[in-house]
Image (cartoon, rainbow, N blue to C red; front, side, top):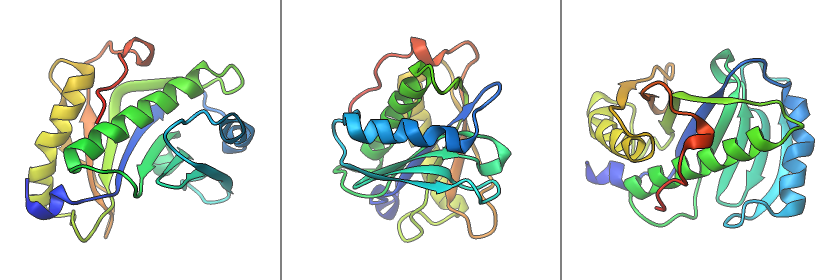
Length: 195
């Protein structure tokens, strides 16, 4: 891993919804309950923002001090996107573990909430490192990132994990698409490894 990539602070992990997904506005009261009930114990949750008017955009955003959760509509594929923006110690490997843990825990929480009707798949995940200073979207940076993503995903999902470069568009962040062996259900996953 290159020294600059090791210092990348911002990390995102997205799980894609399966089946009929709710409208973004349906998640606003759910995210408000998360704030009121303090469901994310290691994060100060601040507000909920509605971006559902943006085509294939961020949908609904749950704003936290060090991280955000989106009911994201990117790529025309709804899903839960966890985004670490600051306030986490450790190198990129630790940040990836944290991002996977946070995304999986939030997806389980949404899936278990009977008001959402959400189901999440685990066969494909999206990992992005939107930190142009430390993680430029270059071949060299992806070559350094891919084994870390495979290692962390392998710890969680077992089996052979395939990591390929994701097209994040012109000027987009360094991104990887993670393919997990079939048959892994979100509810069956253990609590992810602590960072």
